[in-house]
Figure (cartoon, rainbow, N blue to C red):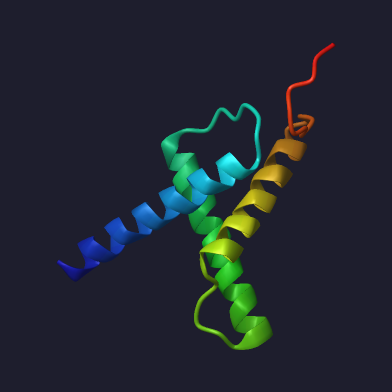
Length: 91
């Protein structure tokens, strides 16, 4: 039962962090909910590893996790060849 609770907590954390990252970077983004969860989990993992290596800390926190996830999303959009602009400014 503890494993199921842990996995559900991972899904919820990934969803919240991924959704906040997608909100932080405006624009259309055709991602499924599973891709959003994966984005959030990847950002949280990378932020946690960076905090462990740099400061010998046990956690990254929500702010750093969202920041790293936003940077990952920005890189993903750039690799697709999309322009990342704050607003859709077609003239």
